[in-house]
Amino acid sequence: MDENWAKAYQSEQMIRAEIAREILEQNGIAAVIVNKKDSSYPIFGMCEVHVPASDLSQAQTILTNEEALKQSE
Image 1 (cartoon, helix red, strand yellow):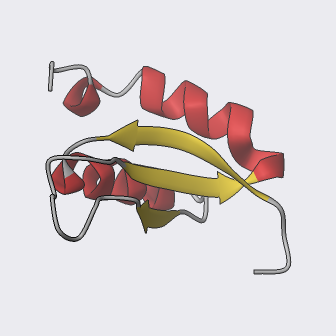
Image 2: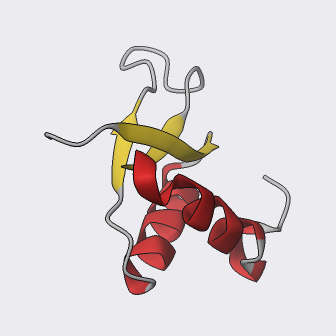
């Protein structure tokens, strides 16, 4: 990755990170998931969604307004 990437979203659940990534890609923002869960104890750690730093504010706005992500974890 040549660009600077920044964390736009994080969740303890991989499926919620996948949903966030898909929402961002549908809105034309490149996104990747960084799995920071512990491999031995998967209850520890987070799944993070990273976007190019130049798209961070737009990505956060999109995710904040997304109904699918407003449900409690």
